[in-house]
Amino acid sequence: SGAPMYMETSSAPTNIATIKYWGKADAKWNTPINDSVSVTLNQDDLKAVTTVAASSSFEKDRLWLNGEEEEGAAANKRFRACIDGVRALATAKKDADGKVLVTKEGWSRMKIHVSSYNTFPTAAGLASSAAGYAALVAALTLLFGAKEEFPGQLTTIARQGSGSACRSLDGGFVAWRKGGEKADWSDSLAEQVANEKHWPEIRAVIMVVSDAKKDTSSTAGMSTSVETSLLLKHRAETVVSKRMETIEKAFLAKDFETFGQLTMADSNQFHATCMDTYPPIFYMNDISNSIIRIIHAYNKWAGKIRAAYTFDAGPNAVLFTLDEYAVEVGALMLHYYPEFGENYVNNPDFGMKIKAFD
Ligand code: PMV
Image (tube, rainbow, N blue to C red; front, side):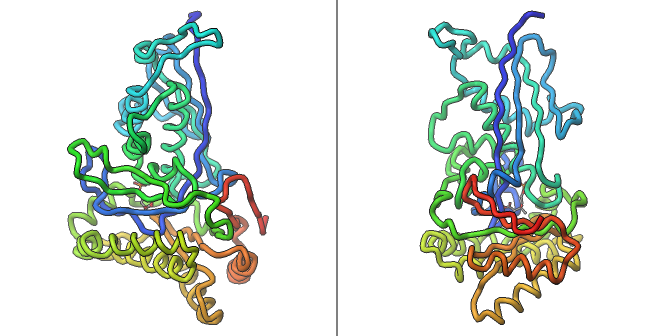
């Protein structure tokens, strides 16, 4: 038909948590049992690029991931929460002369087509869902001309796509406050602690140990951990809030020693929690474990923390370091693992990229 089509594209980078989210407080709202905080990576390497289109001639909402259609996406509750959540904040679309092309209500008479690409391995513990849902919310925001009713509202929508996605709508160091004072969980949102210009020396060396899909999804893993792990309960009740306070201060003070120490300790406690889950969940492999040993040996040799590892729901390592050690850390890893072609040095400062090893 001759119905017009409106289209927008946006991208969002992935983020790497230094204090981990693990365990849902409310499955329906997708909210966490503890706060978390992450570094947003550089857009150039590790991002999702999402195009959204709206037209009254489309028959249903549809989604393509890396060129392949996801059947039944229209009914997927995460996908729905993002489309319906951003559309609820829509404004009228006008042309250059101020003539209304689509009224606020007009958007709800259109179906949405979404096409999203990742520039990194999907579901290998590199937070591809974080970038994906953040890019979806960003693109829908452009499409619908959506306006937040309170700061951080769009992050509460991205959160319903994937928890960690709420931390990818901002650059720099971003905290997810667990919330829970409000019945609709509108206070479970992300907040920028420091922007991407604050600590320009920080680097992330990403080691793609395996691009295989992880065998336990984060949702399934979290649910078993909440049911069975006493360590997770202890962590959520007494460990994380203190760590959040300390690591936020350390990031603001550019104190790499404290930042690195807490990053490693929290990654280790997350994986210990997975081990404490019954039946246990293993995300790291032998290579991951040996990376941990190499980093501790390296820091011991240096007499201070020059690099800090962290692992999510997969075997891939992210090593945080500072500009002055980035080439050394990359070379150290390449010495032990020359087979890893994909070894990036990533600067969270958007736009700047140092690719030390191709
Ligand atoms: O956002 P999800 O449901 O994919 O969970 C992410 C969980 C971790 O990556 C392991 C930790 C985190 O805070 O990103």
